[in-house]
Image (cartoon, rainbow over all chains, first blue to last red; front, side, top):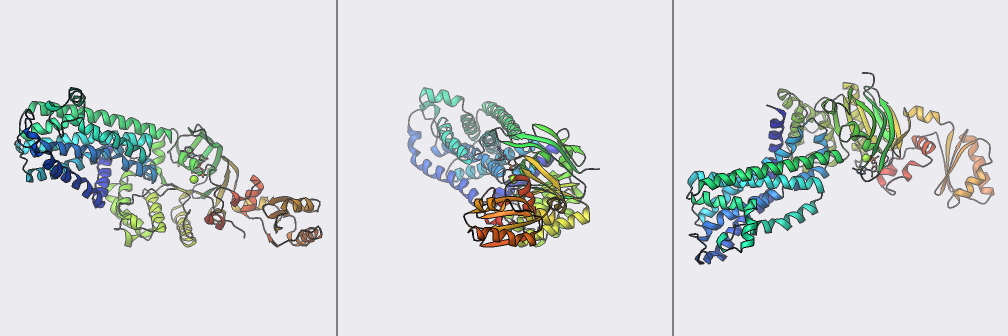
Length: 257
Length: 329
Ligand SMILES: Nc1ncnc2c1ncn2[C@@H]1O[C@H](COP(=O)(O)OP(=O)(O)O)[C@@H](O)[C@H]1O
Ligand SMILES: [Mg+2]
């Protein structure tokens, strides 16, 4: 096995292990979406009655939105781990080994994508418990996991890139808080596109979060597979570009210390 | 291999304008425990980081274990162990997991990893804690794991940046024993940095004193001390150290006089005979001597001689750890 793949695998195992050993983190990232689904599901239950909303039930509409929102927030915090490694000397220790440099980034991105996939499964199952139906069947279910993971991969790469540039937890927290909710609300996660003001709809079209939400909803309904595939491609492009940015940030970091 | 580590005229100015190294040169022979001794900010860590390929110098040459650190950093990385000033172990991993990952990253053949990991854990006396998360380890246990991590690839050269800072004296002594044992068993070359004079004195075969980004002197502790002739007399005179020094200046046999806070430090040819003269001279001038000590030159005096400052006066004043490092044999 080449060094990039084997190093990625070993580092990925380390990150997965860490996640499993901080149960409070798992609890928080799962309880939050459950709260979203329960509260928002109840609160906005009747918006589907608005003419033009165009969905059978709000929980059906909301579940893919919450899956994507969780993917966004879960992975946006990914950079915190690398900041911890920088400040505790773990990064130095690793950079003094022959470890493949790109693997140090790819392992974190893969970890974020896998975490998103697991969270998405749980949220989807909970949504189904509340009455959402995955008409798209198993392919639809898997497509949603893929879309969420691709978004998560891209967001975690950007988060790691930012972390390597600023090297401060405070900055990362501020940026995630600043961009997280606007990215969510500039998408159709909670509101149907037809009911949005035109300018928000325009912004939403350029928003990867919205690509993931729309395609997940199609996959959920088992419709428009062509646009699901197109969204998956666009999200792959977004993830690839984000990984490239993170790699450049890492290179700059290594040169600057 | 004639030299395990050689560096020549290393220069480094950080982006923020801090000139960390201003031409560092020294060399370390295979199998030697070599110390870089200096106060905080002297440039010790920067030197080690350059040698461990973590940062590039602005100028100068460095070779480690037969590889040029600037031309062939990958070659250096395969042949060294590096233990940073900040521990660098993964606190959410167990001892075994940390070592196993490090072995993979260090390209240890897969089949050898489990055996080597358990031998190392035993060697650093962590077998019982091998399955515990490092977060639960004590400071000393963590440092021992650090050491094991640095040894997992059976390196030719081991870098230890302030390995005993913050450790209690017992743990420190144990680490010294471990390093001596490694040296004997494996002929390992060790480059360590320290700001403890005592550590440099007892542990290092040779050392270089680093100050303001330069090596001011290099040699064995005995050599360095022998190069300074005479004895050291320290007289505690209260507030009048400066006047006391002036009064003592004319006395014959005095090689060096340095007022230092409430004390006057005099280096004299014959301590035993000079001491009464020094004290009576001061008492006659109305300066009472509260206490006096006489000693053979220590590394403290070597440092004082080469830099014009006493060692423990540097850096974090009042740091209890640091004053404990003051050595007076
Ligand atoms: N990454 C860095 N960026 C800017 N300045 C640094 C950096 N690392 C060290 N320095 C500065 O360089 C000087 C030497 O530091 P260092 O090599 O860590 O000394 P030592 O290890 O002897 O305490 C100090 O003034 C320190 O503040
Ligand atoms: Mg240092």
